[in-house]
Length: 251
Ligand SMILES: [Zn+2]
Image (cartoon, rainbow, N blue to C red):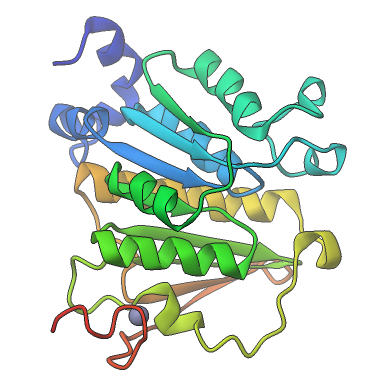
């Protein structure tokens, strides 16, 4: 059940017919894993905590650096040098003490990543490198857990949802596994704060839809965001039957 305090706290989203009390209870019973507490993970964690997702599992082995603060809005100037997970927990506890926080401050290896993914209902990939994205995807496919994947670099963003519970859904590897493009990082290429904020906010929205069970999730679709021209377009993306990660999923 929801307390009077919770009914008040979440009243503006409970007012929506698509959420209602049932949706709020589903959020309360839900667990989400946020991989990476940088530019994408900041709005993801802030919005999911504020919305009342019952448990947030936070994974990042890095510490807060001064160069992070231009876009990683969950951290503040006093947090420089602190573990990103600890810095995020401090902020999230202040926003919503109802949410249970589970911290992963260590780098996750294959086993600990599988355990972390297995413990939640949805995974949000907010990491900044290809090898982490591939590892998170493989763990999600193996565990049958939906993955909300976002990325932003320079003035371009991308977003998609991979849901192994749906036959038609590709996985991250179906789309990006060919690795033809050289990997770029924000530290080399640059990125704008509001753009990662936009992509991360959309990731949080997709996760809420999956957890509370409303709307049409971005499965089988890739959203491309062009910040320079303020344009969004969408590509249909298909599952690769020969994919090395999900190809044998349906026998
Ligand atoms: Zn695949």
